[in-house]
Image (tube, rainbow, N blue to C red; front, side, top):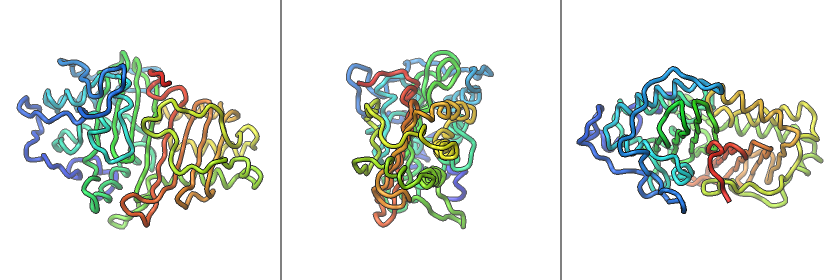
Length: 381
């Protein structure tokens, strides 16, 4: 593995099918549908339902919504789809249903819990085009957005050196609905420790959550470069807690210890009825700024324009936002946990023992929004 920023380019995935996958579309290739065994959702179409048997590839467009410029995302999506044959397009272009949208996981469970096309099945040309879609849709900051996503996949390659069930090729990309400036569709990308769900409606980003991100190992060195993709998230939360007085820390302490995120996969809409912890409205301006700084790395997973708009919304809601934690405030011990819960924002960060290497730590985190998960398109009871 060279630099993490090169991770999503061709050549760094273990491509088991490289000899048989063509770089140009061909009707002869017929890879199986990676999403065909994903869990179904009662009352809706099952995961991996094709958007249409003859779903058109969208035309490139220069149109933009008022929320953010999505033309680069649409152009990248079109370019990617044009590298695929009909069967591969059917794997990627699926219906925007609740079952498909919620088919994600933080586990190395492959097609049993995800929909879309597996990256290891793509040729280098197709993989480069897939990379461009994810890059166009996400943020440009260091250790956030696309850079963070690249490093998460690099960490999976580190695990893959020990356990073959891990690796950056075991990630899936799908478009739920047809990419367009009209109607609703979702960019759905993820694998072990990562779930990106960006929902677009009429040319604008309607929702950038759920965003699950985790990493094991939490830091590693390759070619004299040290990677720590969740360091900004971790350090921001530590600074937020360090800014509290002893009495405030006591008020922020959860009554029950929490050893994992509460609203992970399959927990959609299960926000607690009552907020817990310390109200940010009781804090000074400097302390509130530390909370906003802590929120920022999660928000910056989305494109820069969307991130700025969302952060402004969360800033306006700070007085009604609560922070809480269990374990230690240093976030350096398995069992440490932090939560930020506002009218919109919901962030959890959990420190756990490593799964592959139990002598090291694992970070798991989820970012949701009370109103705009999956673009606010579904109701969860």
